[in-house]
Image (tube, rainbow, N blue to C red; front, side, top):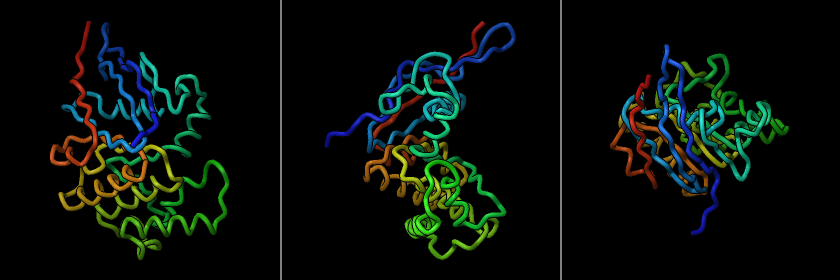
Length: 226
């Protein structure tokens, strides 16, 4: 099946000043990410997996190279436009759930609707209820995060990432703090999204999960230079 290129990554790298020299946080990388891809990003600690995801999603900028999303360079976008892009087209899943403790589960899933194009409250509630049912938490919408297990909290994050029907999901070690059973649940949900046409870029150190992806990218450990 023919798929479209969502992200074109061209020779991106990231360096930081370090005393009189510099440290390379990410070696040069070029890759195209298509709709329906499940790209597993691997590499040793310090190889730049999180930096890579942050640059691709516009949370950080590269020292060199360019990231183009659906024909438009992130480097040419203003801060406001990138923020809108992240809210409308991207979903995010991190190792730490980052749920608001004073909001219910359903309210946490609905957070992306506070920004961007206005959606009626009725449609927001319906969408969030559908997503909670999808991740197996349909009876927990009125509960608060501190009453959930780690695996349940991470499934809430998956639901939140899907709220605005993103074209691309960035998952940075999403199973890093979970046991094997809950890790498999999260990866299965991401596989289903890829099969539905959403692109997934997932950084992981867990080699047991790699076969779940459709593609792999192994990053090399950074090096310091004088």
